[in-house]
Amino acid sequence: MSRREILQRVLSSDSLPTLPTVAAKLLSITSDEETTVREIAELISHDMSLSAKVLRVVNSSFYSLSSKVGNIQQAVTILGIQAVRSLVLSFSLLNLTRTPCRGFNHKIFWERSLASAVSARLIMGYLDESQREEAFVAGLLQNIGEMILAIEFPEDCERIRAMIDQGCEEMLAEQRVLGVDHAVLGQAIARKWGFPSSLVTPIAYHHKPQSYLSGNEAADRLNKVVHVSYLMAGIFYSDRPEVYHRRFVVESKKLLGLDPTLVDDIASRVHTEVNRVAGYFGMQVNIEHSVEEILQEANTRLAQINMTYEQMNRELTEAKMELHRLTRELQEKNRRLEALVNLDGLTGVYNHRYFQSTLRKEISRARRHAHPLSLIMADVDHFKGFNDHHGHQVGDFILREMCQVMTRVLREYDLIARYGGEEFAVVLPETDLDAALNVAEKIRLEVAESRFEQDGKTYQVALSLGVATLSPDDRATTSDELIGQADQALLQAKRKGRNRVLAFGEKNRWLDRIWPG
View 1 (cartoon, one colour):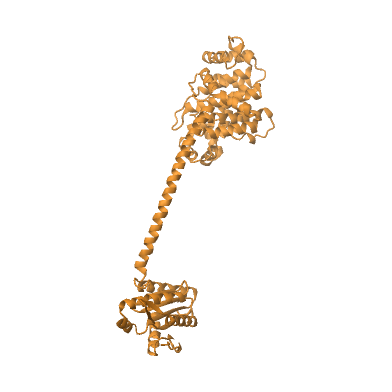
View 2: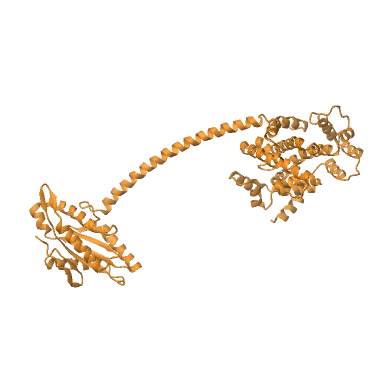
């Protein structure tokens, strides 16, 4: 529904409470400047119960008159039309039918409204005595829109409360759900009841008094007083009293120019004043703690929360340390698992399975990026005879040491793997044939010139190496075919005399350097 449709639904609703007849007529006749005190007194006197309530308050410490008032006409004469009208409206509002509404507590709503009204009257007493009664009614009426929302839109109210519980500001939550907030609805219902503009305006602006720009000084002051009275009531009726108190202190100074001493004096008196005034209006309100005591309790709870928070932090830190320890253990176990799965147990280089998987991936990547890829197959010359003469343990030692020599020649992203027995494979990404032949020759020379020492004995070995290259435009050669080509080149190197490098398909391109020996 649009905002206009929502307002029309509210104003035409049969479920909304209505003002008693006397209150409605009183609003009507007091808008006429020619209305006499006698006419007002006669109207109120028609309702004996209301008259008795008004006289009870008039003769109480609420007004602290020096002499007893015996009838309504005398009360109107002494207090003035505005004060008596405010009393009648207050009694009428506080006795509106409490329409049952799921999730909305009418009792707490009117208690908080009375606390706002008392606070507004008390604050206005320091600023302008003539507006005290108007401030009381405006404070009482400011959130009437919340009750309208609860009656007309109970399901939407549940959604709004859920958003507020999650940290959304109240009026923003109402606007997001309904497209209208309780200030607008309160203003509409107050106009329907015939309230004067001096009381309607604070309802519309009690959450944002700075937005009122008419230039009317009295109306502006009343809007601001009603606003800070809402903050004062929040100290008693919210679970975040310290927040409301902080805003009350700041905004009382900013909006009304109240000095800190005066603000403290108001805060110290409010709870006893609310308890006392509630009795005059037939309400059972018992605010047990002063603002100071409430804030002390809030500070104690906050300190307990902070202690809990610190304990949680300690536990979290310990949990993080334990998590880091477990992570390191897991990383170490994963490393060991990788060694078992991907590495050759004897030499420490990658195993045959990992080599096959990596070669397929590198061929795919080379084709994707149009890069060359080379493969070296290397075999230890006369290794069987070496094992036969020196024993397999020495042979194992030579293979391990030789792998370390080969690794020093390679780049970080090259791969060396044990293909089987004394045969090894080296994958050279982004490497053309000429570069691969140079790498192979470096490996051959490093191994040939190395001296492998164990138990006081020195050993030398030689390698034969075959090189095959996948060109950037080769889209057909498979990994098995590339391995076969490198193996054929290796076989040719063996046949040509061993301890040399030969490239597949180019029979005259081996580096014919005979191993010294």
